[in-house]
Image (cartoon, rainbow, N blue to C red):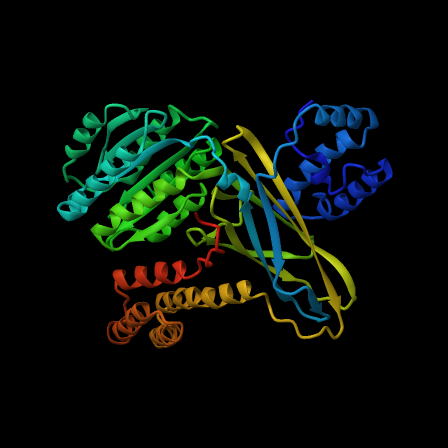
Length: 495
């Protein structure tokens, strides 16, 4: 019998629960999450797991066989843990909806970071733009970064490199990193030419990554471009969805001002990857090497989050704070989170809308399910579950949100201000856009972000006089305020 999943944890009961306890836990879960009672997509997903767990634990004979199989194997460590902190533990009775934030922290087991561990194997594909606009320093730095990556990989890794403009060339077919001199020579042959059509390069890159697709590898495609692609964005997003279903992550890096940041955000978020603004050719080397370094420190890959709010609770947003802050699409579920590193906690801020409530007492809010593949143990679908409840009271004592949530909300406000400034400008409201940018500059100055504040001031003046934002200013403010959301890592998280 398969004992890779903790059925007791999925059902929310201890391993010594009675059959009556198990039946009652299932009845409660059915009232909360059955599709007939709860329309949320996350509830449907989680109820399938709950029903499958009950099918075994609710049958005494099958439960006995499961328990015997559990005793026959060594109990695995808790590879990662999930901690959820609400912005308030006691809510007031109100006749209108109210917002509740949940800080989700997915933390690797600390002992795993300290002990000698198997080396993580990478199945890595670089998809590199070599269109005419990359000519000069940009392409030079790109080559340097690619060569440094080659030097840092070993024969256990798999590497492929695709270069593209208006067509794609497989520069280095997927294979072991062995003859590094020959690989470096191939990279040095890249020349700038042609236009930008990302679909051809992305399709070729995913095809190369598929050749060694395996649960034993971190399977990842890194796309770097400095231009917009025309007419093929939807096809690229469809490719990303297929790649995500197969277990291939995509990270996207845009250099300069001409690329479509919304498109690259969507491309990365659909696979659990990251999207980054690289504002100078020199930064290309640092960003590419940092991304590959983080891939090589993977504890869990294909990490996914399912949020099952109660039927009367609305899931409004999920924002990944650390590492690599970015908003996440909440549909479809499960939500791809990417990878969990040995030495880093992955943190998300979840925004829920609670319904009007006049009834006092404790109530359930949502159930969070986090799953991922543990590379070092070759274990698929490792799972951690957290069920959240709050109290409703008529006159609760004053309660400040936890400092981490308060800090994140303050920084999230900065990101939202620049978003609203762009929205106001798109609607033709120049005065409102200018006011928001000036407000952003004031807040950034107060928080010690002088360079970003100066950019906000420059863009506010530009908008007031020309009714447009510069691409450099828009991207700098968007990605600059986004990066402020990275929570400071607790001492000892990174070694």
